[in-house]
Image (tube, rainbow, N blue to C red):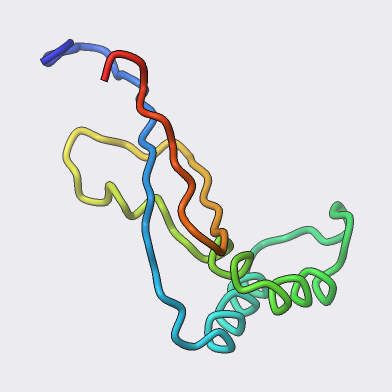
Length: 104
């Protein structure tokens, strides 16, 4: 194993794909809008307002799911690993193929 006992923190990229089935689009959109309402957003510094942002979430189930997916929980309770940030996007349609890194 490469660098198995590194003394200093080592930043890594973790790429994930999670397949889900949305069984209640309205409940998902409502949840996304509720989380947006509860978020500490300074709307005066944004390009839109709460109503238009909520409308965008209600208009796109993929945007709603992407807004509420908490990828930090993927490594929750894993010892020796600290979540530093990430990004999640939900898209409809078939999964994208991600090429394997060279040498694999």
